[in-house]
Length: 503
Image (tube, rainbow, N blue to C red; front, side, top):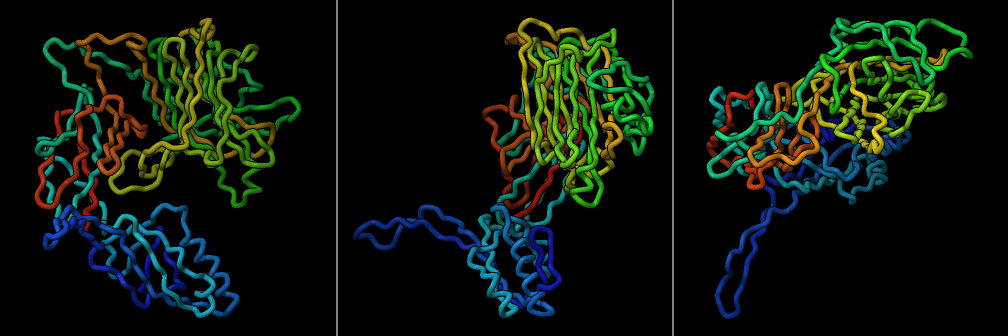
């Protein structure tokens, strides 16, 4: 019999026996009064759970055991965050545990067996996560046969614009936005005018902007539903070129003053060693052009270093002759970049953001980016930069978007692709809303996630609390039969991801 910790199991480790409490320890808070018999019960506390596991280490010799000691330490000693712990005799129950500092790895190696002591700050046993669909009337009948409250994560895939949404259970509710009334004026904070999944070259033409030491050559094609570089123009005289590669441009349906652009992309190295990966350079570029193909602004995800990996985000405003750098930010997490960039102009404010996009598999998650993985969709490693255009230098309307892939001289290039781009026109920014104004909070294509265990809300993977009704309560699903209602029930599909829990 074995165990799995942090989704890893070790073949050299055999579980001999374990001391695993049937229930989490509970202590009662008692208040005693002098000269009165007994005590008053003032609630109770559920203490941490401790699990002791006797294990046998199967090593071929002393040298092998020494290596096992190092491997055990690397496996069991975590960053302080509890990890999933499961046992073969109860695979449908999960504990969230840390290894105790009482474990002596030297002792394990010396005698080939030991007792591993796990502590569970969260004392409950958790079931596997399952997804439950609300019916067409917006109702979920849920039977919680666990012994304690369960905290679902709700996923709403919006198919119709809405000013509010509500999840209700008895007297509790979670409400975002507010419903429109008879005298309401519904306002649209943003209007999507381009949604390009880079599945076709239709509407894309050879690029127009040539700057930042960039020479256009080569071509782009569609592979697995993404734009990827087909060629960079072949070998060239390295002294005559700096960055070079293919670029294509697309005209927007209308020119934009206040806008937001979001683009998902990848830049990764698939070589086997860090030294080999360091030799691969590359750049993915997004240009904002006016109607005359003049550059208003641009943003790059690039690795320009020759001896190490250093992927960074770069944002600039203006043409090459008078460019203004707003962002130049690198992060080790970006070195295998699977993320996004965001560019927004509201009035005279420019906002730039770069971040990573979580493509770890998750039961019940939806959507795919960058090669078809099932994604959790959460954004992390975000970095923001802002600029206030005081004298209005960078206020020309954006009429076209240019995308490009670049190779540095004749160096090897990283694997690069463009996945999805969305462009919105922003409206009503900068003013004070009238009392009768009711803004649209979500539009077709948006995904809203509500985590009742943490009180976190996400819109399209981005933390989002702006429209949360302050009277909302992130209610759990108590043991027994529970009825949860979603309203309005015609704005999209709703699912609840739930893990039941036991003492």
